Length: 320
Image 1 (tube, rainbow, N blue to C red):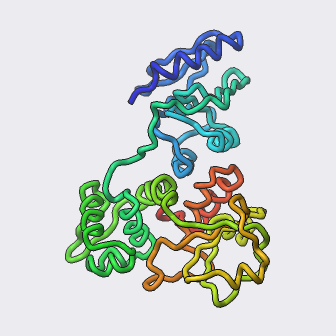
Image 2: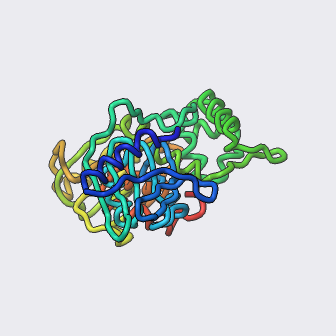
Image 3: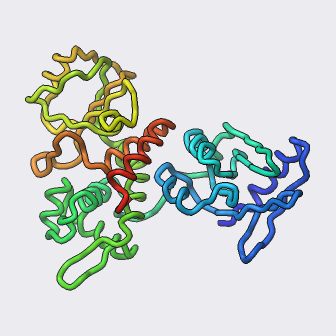
């Protein structure tokens, strides 16, 4: 959807308030550009929803000083990241960062328009149960060629869920038949879709409990693995008092007692129940890097977004 009729008037009202002449949208070398009165031109890159998982794509395709992003909405953490990278943007809510004639104009904290929905992509592969199947396929390369019963058992879903998930991937051309086998296509995009929809659709359905305290030791009898901020801290990418652990066993009582944790709805320690079938899949030390990355992005904290980007470069550069 072309957002020119929504965004350009907001830009010009901001410029008028700042005592500047209005800008215009022109065609330059076959591309729409935003032109400021003094002649500066910025190629317009129109996006729909802008999510944390799209930052690597933006970094690869948007040149600071030459492009401007137009999108539905820029959240505060994303605004911080775009500002840090020197990337101009404007959204339909009126948030913007404009660089022109050696100056900049920034507007923040405009609320998200009510009419905007967060339905990023339709498809049965992106339902909560479909995301469980996709998580298996993205974190175990051999799984794509297992039979449906094996995929269902190792993803904690049903054969029917596996069938409609693979059919949806095939319809979207993310799944190709190669001889007697299958392979995923455009894994980078699939990972981005999984990360975005995990945050919106699967994460809110997961059971968790919070404590306050410190993590000094994990008891050997409690099957806990690190995720998100805990992994980023081990990688020396983040210094935080927050702890995220995934429970693969039946109890964490020994770990809670040894560390003297106290139940606290707003505590700094979160323990989430594994959404994968622990009788079939168990992780050691930390969860797969895709989930570490997704949980860091889900915080929408600026420091965590930076750590997530580094995790992507170190461990997910190929598929993510």
